[in-house]
Image 1: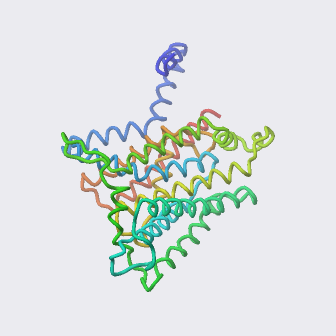
Image 2: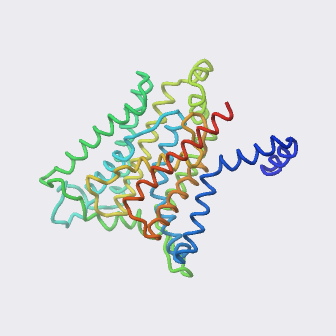
Image 3: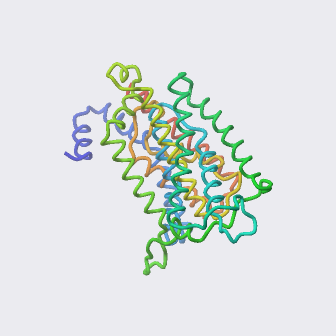
Length: 358
């Protein structure tokens, strides 16, 4: 029986009062999606370029950049936590990638005696930045699991520590805090170069969109088809019950944060290829976008609830809104206010659904 068939039977079995509540709850629970749909329609009518092929491809590419971080932080939220260090880990990975894969002919190099960009070196740098991200994530998970510290406090601390490391990294070899630029073209070709071209629309799809799609499939398998995924949801739903059932709560918590850190590293690697020039501010507040996307996609802060499809939807919805705001000429400063309002509304509606179930 399909989802809609089940809902129809459920509706028909209700009396008149419960039917009114059914519609009221349905409207409130989906209010954010309804308002966003109205906003998207309004933007499409106001600006004909919003639904143009180039605009659609732009939204897809922006979503592909954001997806790895959202996929990582989603697991932390499933555990009733969060990760404030995500944006800084992203920035550190981007800076390291740009420094390791600079064009050797550039006049201003961070590291002077590294090999030219080639297939093996490009892959090795990816492994290095993902390992660095995983180590930071492992530290987060260790302190959360071992000492029962709140993830907010732990990741706030590692956010500050990582930012300090970033600032020192940008001082290497007399760089003086300036941008790390002149990323090798060979690296750009592998990551942000066109994977294929749609001649009819005269647009190209970069490689990192396919990489993001691959990560979505992998994470769906991890969340839904592995013991680790089942343990993650069990710990998020009820930690004590999970422990009594034989779940290794310590190891599960550490692994969730470690995996998240590795994904932040991957996201920073892609960003270095996409931008080609990285500053100390790269990644600032990126975790807020990832958290908002997860909450919009149904990953609940009450724990034990969420799915990969919802995260993907949340990322796309958020990117569509930001592109629409730019096309409507909304003041960039006002966009921060709108972003905060979206997070607040999404969390409020999520908590309402939890209280109704309870």
